[in-house]
Length: 288
Ligand code: R5P
Picture 1 (cartoon, rainbow, N blue to C red):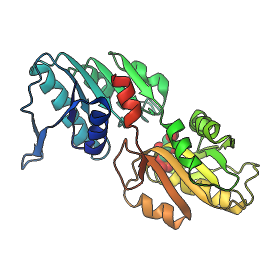
Picture 2 (picture 1 turned 30 degrees about the horizontal axis):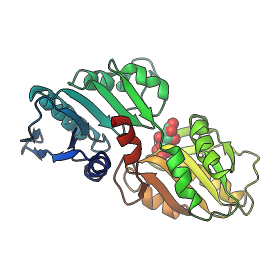
Picture 3 (picture 1 turned 90 degrees about the horizontal axis):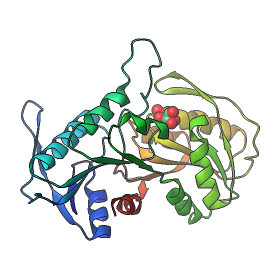
């Protein structure tokens, strides 16, 4: 198998290739002066299985176009079986029409990837698993939560409590808690503006204990900051954040730090300083 690394996932691609003993190809990718994207590979792809690994993290529109160009080029160059590995799938939260007239963005993105030359798609911790049905090619989702749980085991946490940031994170918090043998809860929230979230108080026993907030995505940090305030008022010791996808838009990392978050623990679906857990073994297992 040949692994083609997109520009958003160079380290993850290298790790997956090394786990599989596969050839790693870094495509030539650049921007024209007007912003259009150019991709080229001189690898021999004819009749070979190819996986293109490209996260669609910010700048998501550029990364998405790059992914589509790489997949279509691989098909055009005669690859035998093409798999799109999209560790973080952009637009996955706009998976329905919340207000009349809205685009169902995830459906559009799924259609584009399905028609790009890929025969299968692999992603990690998609926002809602049932939305994989938007793809018209076989689509697989892996969760990084057990890996995150194992990482947390090494942190020597004080009587830890795992808390799902909202109802959508119940399953994720449960998976992390299972690895730690820890108690878990979930919160209810309401978003007032893109960055401001109200989290409803819940009767939980967090007094003097380390708390790990679990979510799929941390974007503005609003959800976590809202929850952290409540947990600190209830006497939590240290508050940690664990997520699959550290989008960390704008100054979110600083805002989380200012809110007293002890550590952000994330995966390399988006390659950042906080990406201390690698999803490479999950992806390599699926590619096998
Ligand atoms: C939303 O339902 C997601 O699961 C996350 O809770 C959300 O994306 C977090 O966004 P932010 O960091 O902007 O609050």
